[in-house]
Image (cartoon, rainbow, N blue to C red; front, side, top):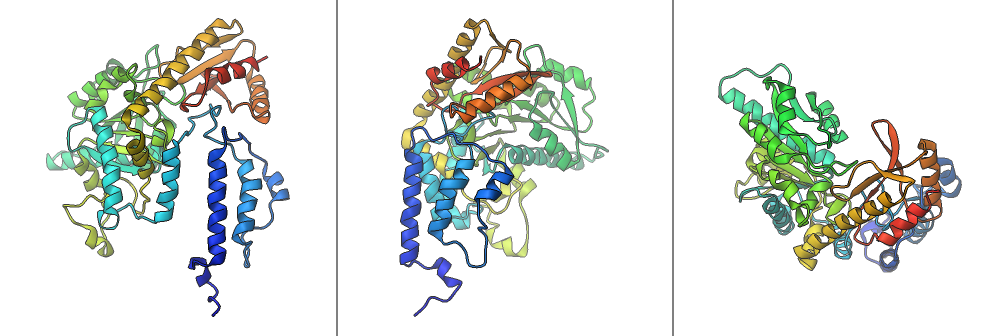
Amino acid sequence: MTTPHGNHMHTVDLETMKLREQVFDYARRRMNYDPPPLDGPKTISELRAIVPATVTEEGLGGIEALSLFENVLAEATISNDHPNYLSFIPCAPTEAATLFDLIVSASTIYGGSWMEGAGAVYAENQVLEWLATEAGLPEGAGGVFVQGGTLGNLSALVAARHTAKEALLAAGKEIPSRWRFACSSEAHSSLKAAARVMDVDIVPVPVNAEGRLTGQALESTLEGDWDGIFAVVATGGTTNFGIVDELHDVGTVAKAHGVWFHVDGAYGLAAMLAPSTRHLFAGVALADSFIVDPHKWLFAPFDACALVYRNPELGRITHSQHADYLDALENPDEWNPSDYAYNLTRRPRGLPLWFSLATYGVAAYRNAVEMNIQLAYKIADEIRRRPDLELVRDPELSVVVFTKKGWELADYSRWSAKLLEDGIGFVVPSSHQGIPNTRFAIVNPRTSFESLVEILDTMV
């Protein structure tokens, strides 16, 4: 009997089994690359010229579509896991995390409710509890894995505002005409995006000579005018430089004024695992919430941000959605991840990190993060040694920012393009205070000192 048209997409037949093996073979080939090719983007016109129509009434067939992806589309992307991908903040998942991401996709687990995904949620929560403990938060802290730092920051700030509003109403006080939150002038762009979405104002606080937000500057900027301030946001490692704000002092000031203290540690908070930098993050213990992105420096695949609350109940009260069809999920004894952020449908994106931690142990993570930091310090010494190069500032975590004397933006751009074209590395221009520079963002334990020196040698 012929399989009815439409049902064949879900039928396990010989054609499907053949496609499975082809997909598994491709996954093996991709994971066996050592290192993977850097590749690089193509223009829209270039792709239009070489990619046929793929979304058609008849379809291409799985084998042909897979071949098109492997041989054309994948080659038009840059491999984030290449050891010399050093721009933005790279992604360097462990072997175990990558493998388990395949299992998560194959298992079709809904990660939004305890009823539907209890085992997966339990495993994710073990990771969140571990992160909370490392940060110094008390027992009972917890949260949820969301898509990325932008959504994590937004969800935390929404919870902060809701908590502040409810506190004012309970005290019989007036709601401010405009809500505001304070953060450093060097804070991540996602905070500006969150302010636009929430329709609130930002109070930018000037940083000190080291680029840090301080408690004193926070007090001076607000000058006793804390009306409408519902949160203070500090950064645990800026994206551009890896600078850690004075978290303890900032948190102390926020607490003195009864204001929610949030730490944006999307990139840098993983450095609390490293012995040499752990002391920089002691103030996270004061936080009402924090985020850290495992797809950045905790060696998990895209996309995962851990959002952790000191008191998760405040997140649940803020974000729980209510509808007739959701009534079955409203069990106070169960943990529904969708209740703790601005999301409902979610995959259990924390599982690859859980599997990797369970496989290798926390000590391996501490060593890997420490290796990256020490490599940053070592290549910074090499940059100091070269008379034509100059550090913009000494590295604190694993980001090294430097300039080439006499170079303008066009010089950095030409050099960067040639570096990628030759398959050596991906290092794009950046800037600080209007002056162009470039930077190494080192979060891959397979990045070597020798390869970084090779890149420096191309700056002629």
